[in-house]
View 1 (tube, rainbow, N blue to C red):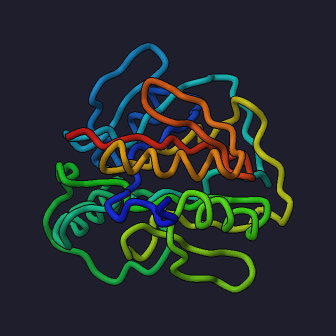
View 2 (tube, rainbow, N blue to C red):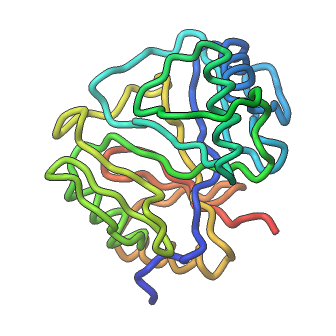
Length: 235
């Protein structure tokens, strides 16, 4: 049984619980250039015209939890530097609050996201780093790429710098958010074929990790109660 995950594995859609579907769609469209692929009363699927990248599920009374495990951030990866410059200009033009070192940008006006845009990585709050490493590296089979002191590490498939970041910055032993809270519902790990998913399933069963079979794939929880959906990429 192979112990390393499919080198072509990547992050698929990020599924979020939000409080207002209209407000969230407005933000992702106006500030980031996402398009709505389809929408129902309380759920919307967003992306850049290709595969779904974000799935937003609205719950008006969803609690907002702090100091818990869950999503720290996700990264939107655009295909070229020109696309990045256009995304930057959109943020400038919409007066979006930004953090980090933003040294320069192109002069052209912001536009929608390129169709080849993907989710580059997700970064999670976890309760204990050693438990997270055992799950994501020893069981799922991601490769450990880097440590950031005693509080964070980064894992990937196929030698990429990282597909998943893991940290204890919400506190060692942080509890999971209450059910239905604003934040991460789950994120998708896209595998290239059924044999790659079966190999991960074997390791999950050997480690006695509970697996829920869904129409989309295998839903599992990491030790910090973050949900991961293992699915096969559409061809």
